[in-house]
Length: 310
Image (cartoon, rainbow, N blue to C red; front, side):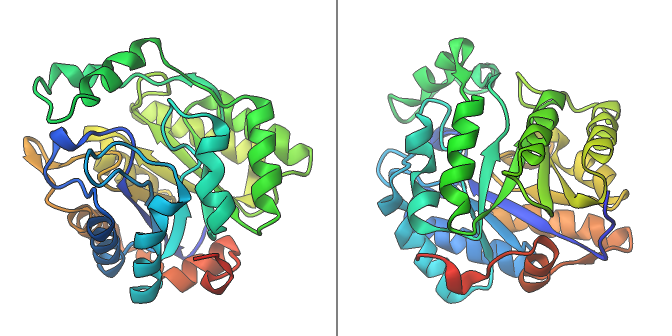
């Protein structure tokens, strides 16, 4: 793995995993998402990973028009790198999922690298009452949910987004996803530097044991050598532990309310910025420097914010 001088912090501000009933601090409206993103950037996040929500029900909304109001605010008020989801929701088609990135042409788009089970239903053990009718069935339905990311789907996204000079955050939930990525590298559809986000703790993907983290890193090192930049995402309670482990080996980190609603055991995070500040404290305690957005652009060789379509 290429060793960089500064660590990139990504922040996933709002996603499709958690529902509004789980935390009053989850940003839902365009203004809330914009304010949360700008605060996370000011706290030290160079990259802001974004989903959109219906402002009334909080349901995931993958229409490009749902993204534009907060994207324009974030761009006008910060230097943050915008990373738009192509994951959207596991219940959406690949064409629905890729529309925001296709239309709005961000510097970075996320890309899930394999078809998998995606079990959200264990959250029902913690949450019993829901504000909106869609929330409980959304979680229950994941018992029989297959998150589709076929080779045809992946090729479609790579082909249709790369013409906009959008680069990718390759989300790899298990070892096979790294091999899938290597397949597309061999075919010339993915160019270095490759930004790999290894994801730990989602039911259906790899676990959160330190051996799991090391296994993913060793495999990526062997497959991609110095051509990739490594980052980690630990879901739930594993968020900070895995971030600290990876950072001690020179890895980049991702935090945010998309992946974890908590700041400590039994204590909800009040904002995305709170998680960014906590992981920043860990990183700086290890003697590591934090990359600014412009430094992260240079590390990942991004096109720059002047070339996006928002």
